Image (cartoon, rainbow, N blue to C red; front, side, top):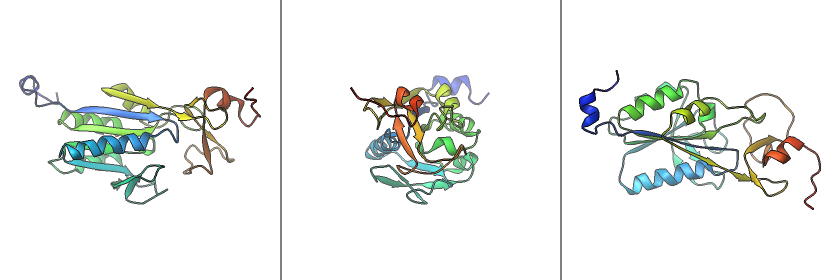
Length: 197
């Protein structure tokens, strides 16, 4: 057992896992940064991690589509997150879908040490299937926030990331040149023309 009943009664284990998920351009990273800024205002010690493979905006910073950013530590494997400083109280993890399948176990370990873990990532890939470790994280999280983008075809709430370029690789780093947010209807219509009347 990872904790004793005596320590649990004393309230020493008050960590938690929060997941922010949704499609591309839905504000996941922006919400992650907002929560981390609030933790900084509260004078909590924070550490932020992202997968080393995510170099779209910056190699060492977590950057939202609105170009808000905060310095982070790029890592190759989720287990490297466990090497954080001993005084860390809040851990932020961005682009969780690109991490290995051990990320939920790592987050559980951190939460059981009393750390607040805030994770942001895509819940579905471009084909509409569960993406990486995010669905497993949603299952073990105390709090899940699913955010929507705006469908670029009809303006409805969008939950899908529609790939606009050819290719069937599950991972294709890209932005507006490669993806657009779509609602369920427009996603399944594909490249068909949609009448807004």
